[in-house]
Length: 340
Image 1: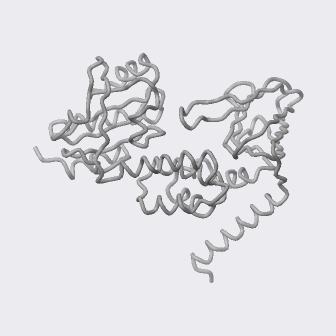
Image 2: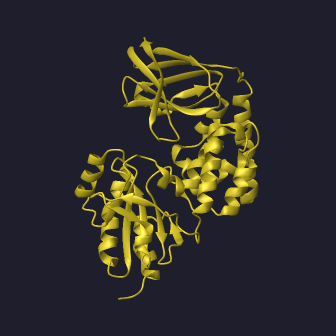
Image 3: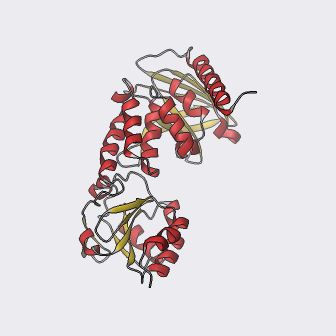
């Protein structure tokens, strides 16, 4: 009988063989051609788009007409990159890794999430995993460590480093495990920069200073909170998980505000109106600050490229924990805050 280690080894070998068999027929070129056939759609328009890693905003790359369910895109890329095809609006979409090769997409509009995509080496690995695996600690570690020759692994690392408290030694191992040509990709470029920033905000490191206006335009600095435990909460009005967490944060704040604890909200909103409306609607009683410029120098200094994220700062201004789940926050704070 096989033990668990042998079973895992066999699984890894099978996955490798599957990927090799899929990728062995892929012909690399200096440009890409995407040919799509979508059943259930007669005519309309398809939009090719990507997410900008600096602004976290959608960038439209190309659009084309759909005729009898068929359409195509052509172009060239410097590196493989995750793209999305939107079909007749934003509701129906296909996420896939685009690279310079001939890619064929076949799908039914009623089951668009299970589109069959052939011709992209990167997409073969991306499609083997689920979207949630990119953010799952165990699966993410598997992707990062086992696939250092894939842009998808660097892409996964970029988000893993943000949502999990990975030790500096482990992050260093992951980053140094990537080789050319992956180290020349845009994902690795942003990963490496993020890694440098995250090292500066590791647990036990001093929290980076900042000076940011509050809702009334008064400047708030981190030094204003010297002597207090403070949860710095990075969020945005447009961030659904952030808004969903707010009721729990409000409950925690109200229960612990008399024990030398407070929350400081830092928004990465671009819309002042949207920011203020969210504060009012969610009844956020703590100080909220924002440069209202989206991702800025403050989020960069804290290595924040996605929200929500949080940092627990002690009275001396040191980071003692980070990215605490809202439902775990009360228990964590009860263990360290002074009793009444």
